[in-house]
Image 1 (tube, rainbow, N blue to C red):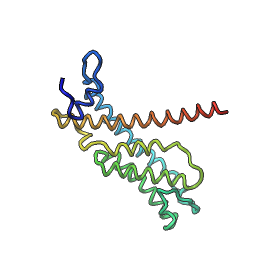
Image 2: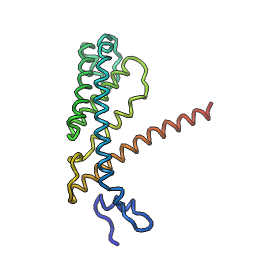
Image 3: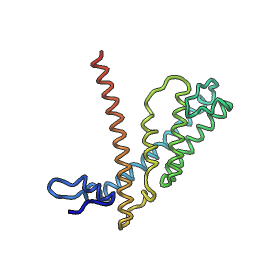
Amino acid sequence: MKAPRGRLERLIAVFRTAGGGSAELLLSRERFAAARALVGAFYAVILFFAALDLFAWPGYLARTEVDPRWPVFWLRFVDPRTGIAAILWLQLLGGFLGATLGRYRWARIAVFVSLLEVLALDFSFGAVNHGDHLGVLVAFVLIFLPAGWHSADREGPEARNVRVANLEVFAGVQALILLTYSMAGMWKAGGVLEQ
């Protein structure tokens, strides 16, 4: 048996069953289609929340006292109302770009930056909570989706490699979510034992 050479062969070798079966189920088109649909749903939800935040804009724009966190440090050098408006418009633009042009890496980067900025703005008015951090982390990992991830339905080794790379990034998102909640759970369990 020859040693696996490419990324696809190495991935299949890792998931080979003891009975000699292959990982075709892991790399099936159905899994790829489901991952692609969930990524699209993620960006649609980002747009939904950006549109929902339109109702909060008057409250944000009425604030004059800002203690900027590091992603929005630049608010110290501009009029607070102008800077806050720029962040809110960036959030809306990022949501729109993600939902409509999420196939392009530059649009996914814009979504990540917009989420980071609006979250930093939220935390610049007081205490930091951890409710929305996971969305920012997921948006960061999704930046690394391969070119053509949205349309790799055709046949051939190149399309298959794109599907594999897509599923690797999607698995990275799932691992990040599991790691985040596992770490939070361990700290809570540790706090219970300490009390």
